[in-house]
Length: 151
Image (cartoon, rainbow, N blue to C red):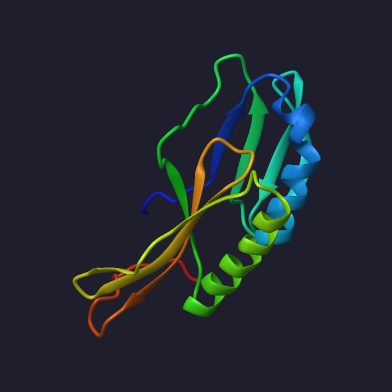
């Protein structure tokens, strides 16, 4: 059986959750529909961002002395089913950015590689990595043999 992703832990500097917890919950909840749960872990109150309450996929945010710093375009890809979904999230992100200059957006032209067109943008807010919000559109015969599906 092939491996599947379960979670990612992101570390903030000490105090990062204390000052940003509610904003992180609000932003990612409103923008991406993620459920935010305060969880005691590693002697602190971490923040678990669950991408879908019916799956085991989540991002755990904790505070550490040695924390993640990502000055480049390190990112986690979040895939959607349609171009329209990605465009709607981008428009919502732009509205949020108009209210808060800490919301960062990087827009891209469609990337066409063989029979695959990737339509995407990056967003970053208070967490140390970008999120690549994308859809992959496959030309006839280009779809992967295996892919994520909801049952």
